[in-house]
Length: 195
Image (cartoon, rainbow, N blue to C red):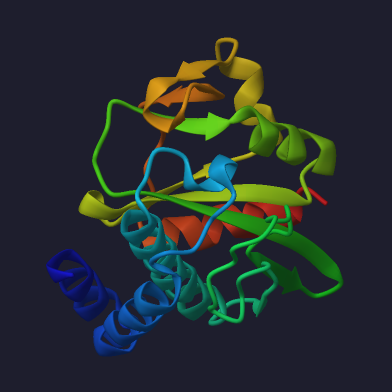
């Protein structure tokens, strides 16, 4: 939990709230059966920890974006409860700018990597939404973001199996353009400008 404390103290959400939430969810779901597709190669404790970490990133984004846009939590786990049944593909956040709406799916990496991976099913949802859905990827060690849009996949090689997550087919994004929080807001503003 040490990493989360540093992360939360730096970015705002009260880390004690998330440590307590993690411990509650761990106690409740340590012996639960999760959908293997979402759990991948993680133990229950790792899966729960990663899920709560994802909630912290979502809260960071809500706090950042609500200064500029109307933001709602819209994902299946927006009530901050671990889902043990079938997961849906409802995006994590809905962002409005006037009459325009864009949905955001949030993904995070706990490590700085040479390349980041997006599963093909998520890529297909992005492509199908035609710019009304974007992926905001947070690289925690760098405190930076990058955005993945449908056009991102036009420049990438065909998807390959990723052994770290059970050989699921993934696109590999090498050396993305990393953004500060302020740059992320401007990039999202430009997404709205395209509509």
